Image 1 (tube, rainbow, N blue to C red):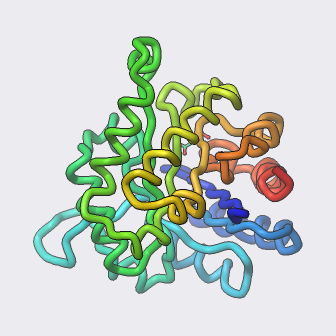
Image 2 (image 1 turned 180 degrees about the vertical axis):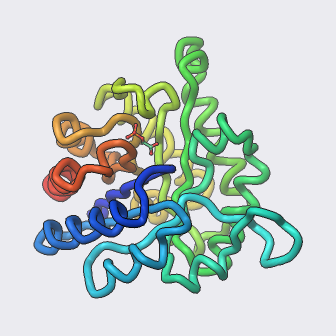
Length: 253
Ligand code: PGA
């Protein structure tokens, strides 16, 4: 049985006051939920303050991105050591907004993933097709190729710290969600690919989150699918009540 993992990706939202308030609301309301991992990903400047609020709680701290170099002349970038220094345990890599808005490619994402794993972080590798790719029947081809490229050089031992997040680009922030059946098909294909690349034990244990307009009203049906092990939540994670309800759906899903 895989332990569900629910992530709250706050993206470029909140300010210092609302970020700490949201963290307080979440630690208050989620202390008694059943067995699952809960990670929140605030904007970089608020990591230390939010981390303080999470101390002693069951929610862990994540970052929305990281750079692969250790230090040096990389203006604007943030290293793995800077993240671990402020208590970060997980990092999102290859989010569709970084792929499609900022322009990151598979090679850069892979370098970042390797750096994150080397630093002992949990890496959440996001994969997903655009609407055009889906409509031309290329969904599996696209996500499997992102998977192969993203995992280049990752060994079996490191795979225990990798989480996959299937997030169809057309479903992110749009209010459109993949149907539970459609999402399940992609998750199953990803698990099969992990099995061929590594082995059945790793494929059975790796968690694959679904992301893209998950809300309290659709979470349970998605999380009930056999290969969906929780979700990566954007917009709905900014509302403590909504996010709490999604987490609870993940535990029972
Ligand atoms: P959304 O974002 O829930 O707002 O669609 C999901 C994500 O980008 O991780």
